[in-house]
Image 1 (cartoon, one colour):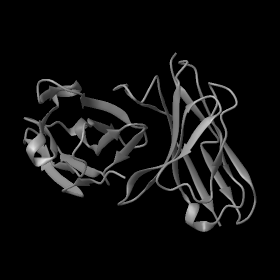
Image 2 (cartoon, each protein chain N blue to C red):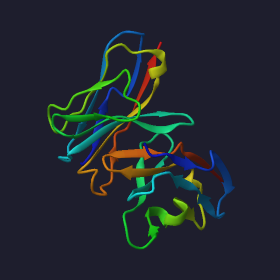
Image 3 (cartoon, chains in turn green, cyan):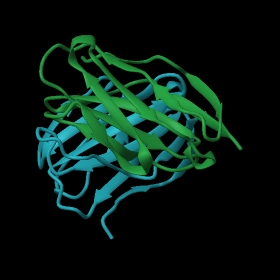
Image 4 (cartoon, rainbow over the protein chains, first blue to last red):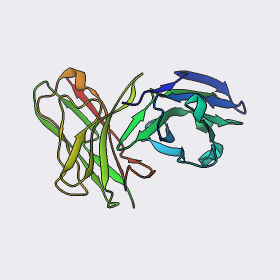
Length: 111
Length: 114
């Protein structure tokens, strides 16, 4: 099975700070990559996804992610976070019929 | 409204008492799956189904059963629940997983096994 690693378990930052969450995966073949977000008490929602083409992917709410194939990485970024970005963020990798998730990174944004 | 529904949302039960968590989607999706979410472990796939009568094991299938008799429903069955199955369970669906379709998640079922 795929192995998906998220580098940080918990990130705390202030509003307007920049955010970068790391994600690495283990499979060397063709993969599809996703970032999901889970706001407190809610279910998972898709932030963005990468299939092919431009390795810089833009998603909702000002998030973007960069796929670097040589590093097996798909890092999530946001230039300026808001309090409402407080949530848990999951990287996921799709290989054939299976979707593997990372352990998640909890992001706390202080007003 | 397009959605994935799960019932019950919360359940407290005792070891060994069979239970079923239902999952239903109204989007005519081919693919459905079950995950459990545990702190520090993220989401782990239990079972998935690519279509009616087609199911397969995910990464953590032990202690669980599923069935897919209708396209819209994908119940998760715990024949003899144990405390290590205490977790938050999510059902998800997508039109197809072999494409790059987004998975739509249900609201979750928080299960406690005493």
